[in-house]
Each structure stands twice: as structure tokens, then as C-alpha cells.
Amino acid sequence: MMTRVPCLLAAAVLCGATFAQPAPPPPAASSANEQARFLSGLRVPAGSVLEPLQHVPEYLDHTRAYATMWRKFDDRYFGKMRAFAAAQIAPRTGSPQALYYTFSGPDFINAYALFPDVPVYILVGLEPIGSIVPPEQLDAARIKAGLENLRKSTAVTLQFSFFITKDMKIDFEQTDFKGVLPILESFIALGGGQILGVDSFSPDRAFPGVRIRFQKAPGAAEQTVYYFQADLSNDGLKAHPALLEWMGRFQPAVAYLKAASYLMHEAYFSRVRDFLLTKSSVIVQDDSGIPLRAFLGSGPWQLAFFGTYTGVLDLFKKYLQIDLGQAYQASGAAPLPFGTGYKWKLGESNLMIAVRQAAAPKAEPARVPLPSAPPDYQY
Image 1 (cartoon, helix red, strand yellow):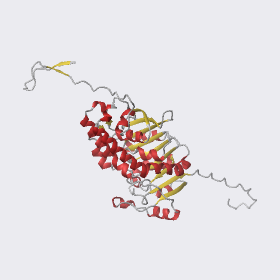
Image 2: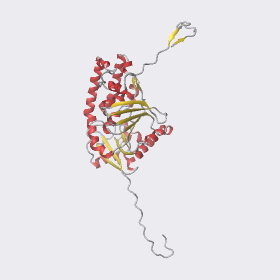
Image 3: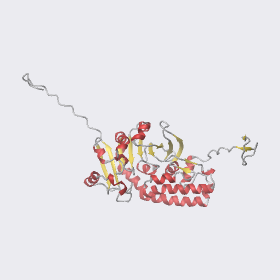
Image 4: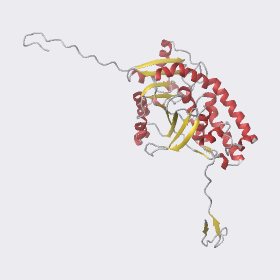
């Protein structure tokens, strides 16, 4: 379409000149699954518009670098977490319909390692959802910059098993692969999943969300990852209560907490803490999640301890739990075969599995026939 420019007193605009309006960007020719594999350094299907881009030397460098990162993660964490989950978590969880992973950021890969079979993953964090510009619409320099930033954004998790939020705020907006979305899709692909579809989703449109449908293999049951950018403080949830109301519809559900900044030790995060204690049948967490004292005061929980509690980093010294250290010593905690959380080194990490026990029915008081008594006897 051509638009007539009115006469303006500016040297840069010619009176009566016509200019073409910028054309909208072309629709993506690549699918979400192809994009996820491309970002992850995995081969795309033959005939994909992205296939020629995978033969560029800079892309081959990305493939080798990402493959090295993933092999180390698989060796140190992923494989060992899968084995631990099969032996220790799955027998305790049954068949939950959903996993609550609050304060997660884009850390799908650790949740998937420990809970590979849940139909629904619900992740919540402060990080923006972002977007992926289809790589076929980018030149080589922009693709290279985007892939370098993706490796930088995921390196901490693949090396130490958690994200650093302050670093993500800078990294996530640098290139054409923005926010948590490219990381979520990449982790699904690295974990062996095939993405079926990606769309926006929010329980009440008050906060942004994304839904990613995937399956482990062709013919496998469909699974869904939801990620919401939301403030989980009491004030944030008071302003937007629909999130917890919607999450609570998925039952039975289990929860996972890792590197959660000890936020639920504070009174101003009591609403999300109480939600997890009320709605979860099983909670798997490191010491940065819900404080031990909350489990002891919220109903019958059976607690199993793994690894060792070696205190907290200096940054979090106010959250030292003396009672948790005593519980680890008294329980004879079983070994934890991988590192996790802020104390990520093997031999310094801890993990607790809390299983809600059915409350024993209250016994009816025995009905004893009243004896004959004088009138002044008080019953």
C-alpha cells in the first residue's frame, strides 16, 4: 500500500512524495518443534527450512558447545536424578495430575528429571515469557548472537542446576530469542520431547502465561508445560487471586521447590506456602523451600531426608534451620547421588520428600450407660 505524505516544512520530507508502508513480517515457515531443536543444536527434520542453516560453521560451533554442556549435565545431574526419581519419588507420589513448581524461572529440565510422567507442569516465576523470532527470518549475525546468548542463559543451570535471577534479567532481553520461552523449548527438546504446539494462556488475563504441549515420543501421551510470569507474594496474589484458584483445580498434585530464595520462610509469602501445604500430596524440596517447622504444624506428614544439611550460604544466613540440621542427623539421611540447590556440590546438597498422611479418623467416645445417682451428682 502507498501512502501520500502531506506537505511538511522539513528538509527530509519531500512535499507530495510517496513512501511504501513497511510490510508485516512473513509468517513462520518453521514449526515450534523445529525451532526448539534448532536452538538446542539438534538435527531438524529433512526438508525443514532450518536445515540449511545447520551447516553454517558458526552453527556447528553452537552444536558442539551445547552438546558438551548437555553431556556434562546428563552425567552429573539428569541421569542420576532420573534414577533417584524412579527409586525414591515415584513410589511415594502415585499418579499425580500436576506438578506445582513455584519460583521456578525457566527450569523445566530439573522438574522433568524428577517428575517425568506428570501430565501437567505448572511453573511460575518473575522472568518474562519472551518470544522466538523464527530463525529463517534472521541473518547469520543475529542467529549467532541469539545462540550465544541462549548458551549463556542456560549455562548456570546446566552446570549448577539452578538459575541466577539477576543475571537472567539482563541476558533474557539481549537478542531475537528472548525471555524464558526459548529456554523452555530448548530444555524440552534436550530432554527428548517433541513439541506439539505453543500458545498464550492465562487464567484471567491478569498476568502473562504460555502453554507448551509436548510428548516424549511419537504416540506417547501428551503432556503440557504452563509458565506464568507472576508475583507470588501475598500482595501479588491478593491482586490476582485467580492463579492459585486455577492451580488448585489440578488434583492430586505434587510440588517441587529448589533454589527458592527462602521466600516462604517469610510471612509475606504465607499464601503460596499455605497453598502448597494444603493442595500438595507430596512436596519435594531443598532447604530453601518451606521451613521444616511449617510441616510439623500443618498436619500429618511423613518426612524422608536425603543428602546432608550443611547450613546456608552467607547471603541467606538468617534462614539457618537448626531443627532441620537436627532432623538430618537424627534420621540417618540416605545418600543423595547428585548435587542440587544453592549448595550444589555433591556431598553438600539436601533434598526432603514430604508425603501427606491420611488423618486417622477420630474415635467416637465410648457410650457408657449412666449409673443411678443421687440428684446432686454432676454429669
